[in-house]
Length: 178
Image (cartoon, rainbow, N blue to C red; front, side, top):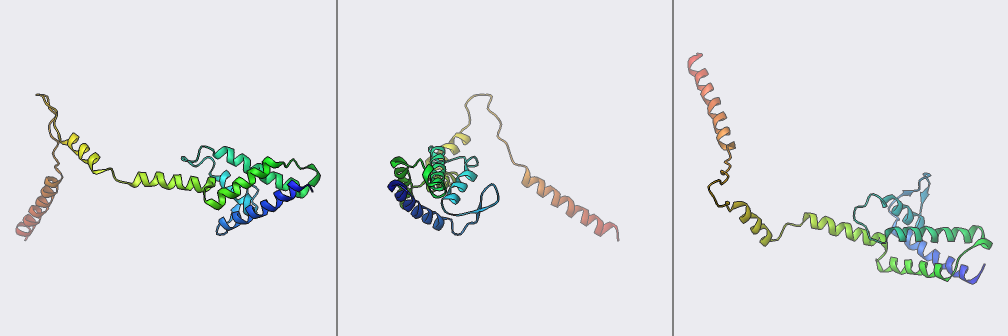
């Protein structure tokens, strides 16, 4: 095993351990129904969320492909040591991913923050000035003789009429049926 491959495997073990900690409370399965852990769980999560997320970081697909390649390289080194294509660039990619994981700036964390921010914007009420402007725009009549008539609510009168009709029917029944 070459020196770069040895360094790569040592770093991969650290990355895999961090990913196992991230996904320790979840049970994830690949498309063959096998339970996955570590980096494979991270990749499967990305694959599962790949098309369902409306808001995701713009570099999502590139990171997904890179992580799949990093995992493939690890498997190649471990299972077929002589056929490895591992080089310094691959090691740097893995180190960059490790640093992103440790800083909380990895792709899944960024996607989670984007989803949280998007849902917070949906729940946040409009500012007072925007609400006032909308209220004034709705309440201010358009000038001119062909103004649209104000729409009145007849719900209260309808309820009153129904109650009055039931009361009248009850009185008629009480006095004339005896």
